[in-house]
Image (cartoon, rainbow over all chains, first blue to last red; front, side):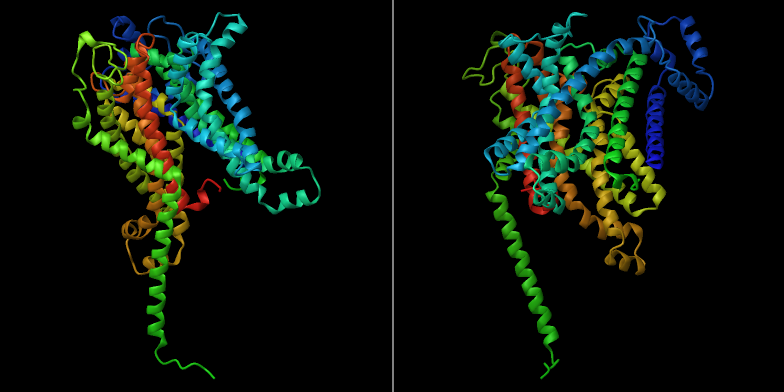
Length: 314
Length: 305
């Protein structure tokens, strides 16, 4: 496990470096003064001179990159162009809204999709299997931002069951929860179908294995065979899928936050793009990508822990 | 009593090749029958044909000019004159949807073919080239995949401003790794086969081996993947245009229709409903078609029937 862990962590570190390099070079690739890009066009000449000195913009690009890197590692992602507050403080305020949304969205999808896939695989060809099959394709086919818009239209504006915008009153848990339902529903819906299909396919494959036949021959109950023996193996590809799919989930969450005016990191980046507030964009993109890299890393390590064969493959 | 080795060799081979040809023909017929009896595949094909036809013939089918404003009739609900209603400026939503399909087709055609070609070449190089190059390309694929598409698009648009070219570039960049990985795996499997070794010992150049001999064997799964990637590409375009960072108004695209509809969602809900339907039908169509083709040509990856 230890050699695998080292290699996998090294790989993740390299990818994070590549992301940092890309973010750094973005500001330098476009024509114009990086100081003006970072401070906004309203910046005074003194502020520009101060920023140029502080970010060492007159020094060679390589030195600048290491300076940028050093700051980023220490949690200094620059200041908001308008309020001058540190970017990290602003992200800290907003990341909770995004994490709550992403975890709830994925959570309900897993809780519904995995059992559906198992049930469909245990009785292939049954009405449940067929309904699950048709529904899952349908759910996958609707882009999540469209689910968000339509859910907003149906449940908030027409039926008036749930609130349409915002994240709820701070401190009022029930209110915050009611604001979370629709966006979480919207970003998780496609995943229910996706997971159900994936679990069904790998479950069917595993149920045909000799060791399952042996387990049955030993007289174990069907429930025990499926949940205790088959699911343990059948879930592996699904874990990888969940890890890889988080990128898509993050994208969906950005849309949901914008559509439901939820003050998360995605909405923050979007607003900063229209304001040309580059430090915020940079910081937000860095946090979002690092989060994704971390999730993929965790899912890979989880697989390696559950499946010894993987450890030797890297 | 032993058989005489007179000239059965010749007749045998012709017999075998005839049999082979016949069995290949039968197999092809069987595949066609299997496709035609798969309701998902046929539905998919139908939807895909409708998508192509409505996009190509939009100027002739559309009842109105997509940008013709009719202020007195603005924000009217669905009527016989405007079957999908009109928008804030009195433009006919149905005509705009038809013309929006052209944008989707344009992005899908260019985006998918470009990322397929680039992914194919990079994947073959990764699978056939030296180990360090393979590792480097895999790392590059991983790095690109580490950016959620929308986040990457937002970051790029922050610097360049919104445009169709940016959308296209994002679409191509983010979808290259899927093709690259599939092409790489398929090339790796071919790398040590006898016919490739034979070519190599005959002195064929690497380029010739890759493009004449590896490519025909790798391209099949990539084409099926391409059918499955069309919905992804179309959704990215619609999503980015919805956010106002892709196709720009007044150009009609499914995303801009949804964007304009979202702004008036309380007063003119038909716009976001009508604007979303073609998106879903196109996505469903290509997904059904891609899965049906995959089931027939690559049963191992299939739906597990």
